[in-house]
Image (cartoon, rainbow, N blue to C red; front, side, top):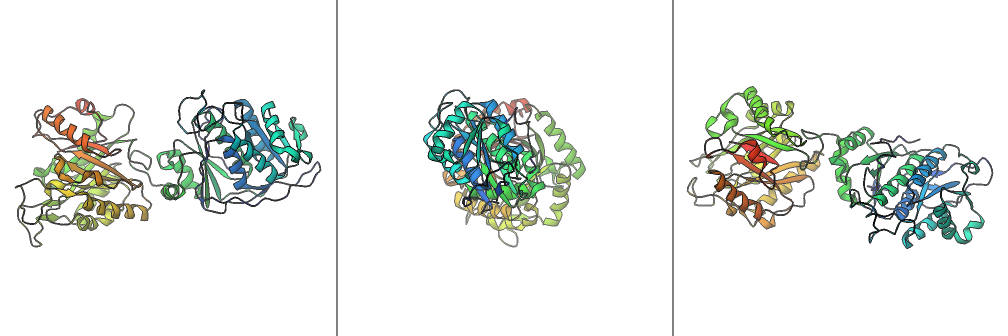
Length: 537
């Protein structure tokens, strides 16, 4: 039998919806087993693709699809009505014991979506409780005819009616039973140890019904079942651990929200690698709050980070982060290290920017990572190209706990000199950096990587509405760097918040000497939207 990696026990929190990651084609059907008291075992086969997503919200259609992808034939099938929670659990137990598929008859009240609206009222995507959707009835009948079972065991009257209607003339060769004793246990079939089935670990009634059937069918086939809270396995620490342990050859995701398959495949590659962010999981936000010391090692004038040695900076970062540990959100002490520093003179390359060596930064980066901290490398480009500067730190950015920050304030156009104007970086240059950073992150199968854009004037980011937000492995954050009185900072904050593209996270900077007065942690957390990153300079 397959190994089930469970969250809560099924009767308390049934995994919902299975998204098949690498599978899209169905197995071909086979004829049913010969009659007799000792039936032939069900025949199983691995999915023909490595990632398959089955995203139908109707539990009857979803259960048939899971069966079709895992079973070639079966001497018996267990069927329960979607509207009968107790019947669903009985059917699941029977299917697992007899190593045969479980199918669902009819729809269930709810949206068919993990974490959807409360159950109780039918939606446009599901049928009223106890009735069968046209698609669900057709799927049930088609799957029963394909499997051609000797017996169909129904656990409630609604399921029995649906099965007889779905079978039609085929009921002459298939017996519809109501007594489990009349359906013998099959001999163990060859299992599917390389196959993992993802199901939702919560949701509405339709989602739970589909997940219950998917779990039972997968277990009967000898596959591993991994429940996932939400749609993204990278955001579920338990699912990450299970996937990293199994390293499946094929994944079938059953339920809405997991797909599309190519995106899920990339997410699974990260989950299987198993590396998690400080604070847990592989998705940056929501799920943690970063509290950072900003500056350059050994240079106090550039920020709080450089005002003490490395052990002292780690201790200070943790102390600064401590008051933010409220509300149950993990707080991650962070270093934001200035890697390239704006200069008053052009320097030998005429770029007005001095790049720190990787060797000089590595001890700080490694020590912070060992202490459970996150690290952001900050670029003050002058006349240099931001992508060229980012590539200097490729080896550090290949670490799972290191992100990147771009500081447009210090960008110089031709003919400009430092401190004579506030710089600007066009979205096109930022997008080139994000393209490269995303490719690096994917190549190393890293958790989602943070990309910070500093801003206190809207002109600092040119064509902000053209920022590329399509990299699933990057978390873009716009960091408000305004200074001065609380009212002035609030005004700057409002402008930054109003201009940011939808879905972009936000950061807030507190200045020890330039804010009058500096906000307390409680006042900082009172900002709305609440910042995901707070830095101190």
